Image (cartoon, rainbow, N blue to C red; front, side, top):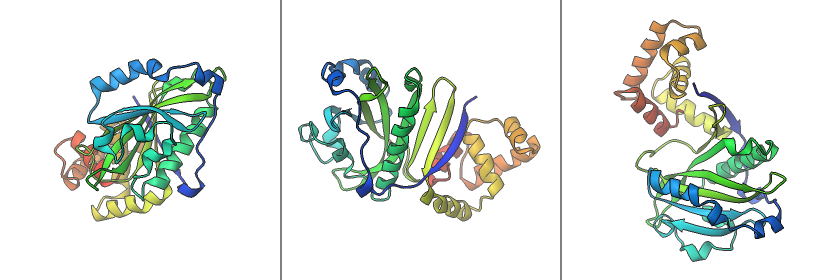
Length: 269
């Protein structure tokens, strides 16, 4: 069973954010990254849950090496405008509330990745959920996946493949967050920024959800069964069943899947 851990980060002022650069430039110059990432791109083309675009960042220079997909449909610029310029240009249309959070998430991820032994780096899958402004001047939810990496002999990232998918048909509300999934150990970190705490408490209060029900909701979203939740919280299975039914009612959900989806939309989890 997947285990979930929640962490809270401090936001980072965009003006103070310094991109993580590194890796061996000589090694980077000897690689054609789009060839290395071909299998990953083929996977996303087959299994994408919405329209998407991708870009390859050269971390030794902090620039975008190549891009593709629905760039012009989803953003304000063409593919040619972002080649060989700073990768940060891709996020200049991030929602103002989400931008400092995105930098906090990115900073955490690069710090986390750099400390891992090279043999463990490929085990982790990282996704950021935030809002971008589209050509129609509307903010919409996207899923930013750090899909694949190329490392030098010292384990430093020299190229990174990022896939940005439109999930506005799935997610319409909530707060920016990041997940870090450990594929080997089947565990997941959920990361939020500290300023989100008040939003979660306010939402829970408006929906008249108690602290205990919120605990149950988070465990449900992590895949726990009623029996496992009862054991975790030292309550009876019957009590957990009552909490589950009350949550379904308050969240206007007909199933557990809909309960979790509605909770994500409202920013409760």
